[in-house]
Length: 410
Image 1: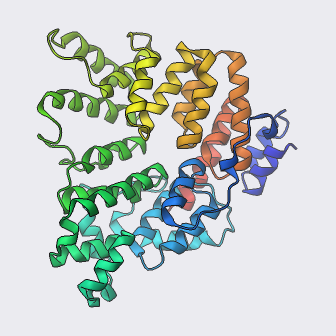
Image 2: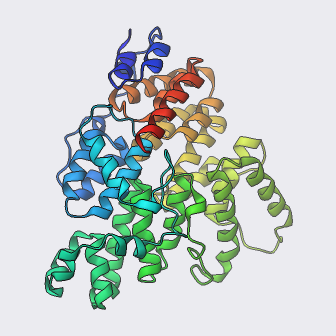
Image 3: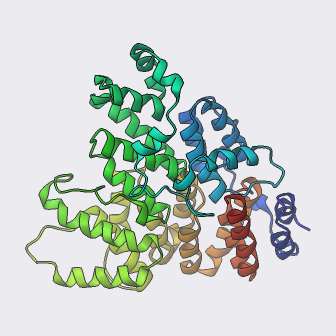
């Protein structure tokens, strides 16, 4: 049995271990990445940064869990994300704590194996109210203001409830917004989306709307985006048409309905008036994505790279850049796939598209990278599923992994 199969067995993934047991795979053949093994950081924001690369690695989750002591709602939201997306050892002592924390969400708890609170049914402020802590109500406003710089939802909302002007200041809103973006990059969409919703509908901070949408698009649950997330006036009037188109395409892409998204894109391009300005970066990235998958369009990789340069934290654009390179710039495909991986971590759909499009000689190098990911980040489902796909064992491995995730998140 090779080292990769042994890793799977250590997590109790025996079907996966047996399927990969005879594969000639070696994690040491891939390039090294120091971020995979760096020591756990000492504060929440840096832990989020490490999670962006390593996902919900048990050591990082344990450190974050300690930092969130006394913040029950945030713990519950993190628990939902970890249980639904991370392969934990059956005897991991943190597993019971995560389940107990997630259960406190009651009716707001998403279905097994799914992330994201339905914010239409359970707005952020209602969630906070349900978990309100009596000790916060007993605190003086001066104490709460001092505590607010840790950006706990309970403290922030208690100040809002009291009408304190701290949460009305743009500076604190920008800080909360940046914190929520970090949580989204850390692949904690349930946590991030509640912060964004608190900003959006709690304190009317409209810049949070698009990030809320992007977070739940990336998580594959666009139906949980509140209907008022984007409103007229959120962007300049000339940009409203393109933004509406972009959101529609992304909603369909998020649930895997690429055929419908592509049909709408082609129809809208045919009907787009010639006098209208050049499409926005968002539309061009979608055009590049669907054009690569369906063999149409003329959006070059250079234009996708320009969009990435405008917002280096735009996960979707970086994924599209790797997918476009796989077909249109194969000599750069491996580097751009690796750049996406090191910036945003493991993700199944984008990697699958890259594997499907790259030449065979590049596919071997991608497989080596996946071996490294499975070895150093065995809690991540995507590398296991993709190795199964490359080794003609996709169905049994996916079934075992998805079954584990549903079972642990019930």
